[in-house]
Image (cartoon, rainbow, N blue to C red; front, side, top):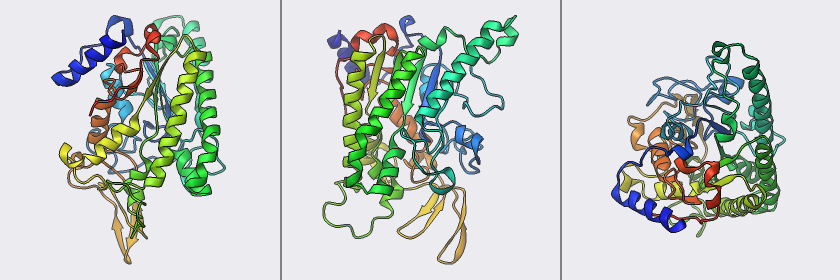
Amino acid sequence: MATIILFLLLARAASGQPFPPPSPACDIPAIYNFGDSNSDTGGIAAAFYPPGPPSGETFFRRPVGRASDGRLIIDFIAEKLGLPYLSAYLDSIKANYTHGANFATGGATIRRVNESWFTNDVSPFSLDIQVEQFNQFKDRTTYLYNQAKDESQRHNLPRPDDFMKAIYTIDIGQNDLAYLFRTTGVEASRAAIPGVIDEFAASIRQLYGKGARAFWIHNTGPIGCLPVVHAKVVNPPAGYLDAIGCVDGQNRIANEFNEKLRAKVTQLRSELSKAILTYVDMYSAKYQLISKAKDLGFKEGFTICCGYHDQDEDVYCGNKGKINGSEVFAGSCNDPTKVISWDGVHYSDAANRWVTNKVTYGLFSDPPLSIIEICPENSGVNNLGLTQFD
């Protein structure tokens, strides 16, 4: 079976043709997402202060609680599955949970940390809290659905049977590394990684216990390549930056985190026999995008569209600040579609589209399946191995 799947992936990639629609065996009716600002569609904005203009300007034409000029990877995933964009669990206004819910919040970590949104932009909704919110969500919506006397009372509620058929997407870990870098230093941070990964696994087990069967797990991206990190580097010593200008030490820790995450996913496959757990190498996809930015039609990989950052000054996207004594507004660039980084930390709509097209076709996944093939019926292919194509 592995040979057949790899042949199909190679043929699809070589042809450049769109992938076929989902097969009946993988009718995915809903997405339940957990994570941080890379996939937050309005959670932290509903809990605290929503981002103002120019966020959302490229696609939604207004701010919609996303850290981008447009769509996030989770939005493009929803599009590929033929599902509506996810409503944030914390946003009660016109929310529709028929096809899933989003528990991700900007600033979220896997492990609880002793910081706050008001001091270091750390979300109080760590992964274990997001999973607890899901537990309550499932229990309460199932009760209401079953108690409803007619279909009108089930409006906006998920079907109880869909929880086991849904795909559970998880994109979190970058803020754990940022916290460790900030509080212990880059090299010392590696000692904490195994404990963070164990807490991640505990959340997967809890979700499995509540009926989750299809998991799509993103590893963490190249944190040392974030333009806001690159902007602080002046006269670096030899070896501090890698071949494309990323902070090598931070990326080495990110890779170590990812190696342990992948090993833990492999272990979980043997424990959770009825699940399919897909490990997605977001790091490699994003690094490839940054390293080949100009070849792919983008500006230089460290260009920031919205915001101002240098060694001494930071004016974040959509805010006012002083640069050399003069007040400035950190607005957006002329053409966000040509820039990878929206605000120095988060990716643009165009970059998110590119990354999604890479990872959802199985080119960076273990097992090497497209996202439309991730359903419990395919759990037997859990160990085909990661395949990459440049």
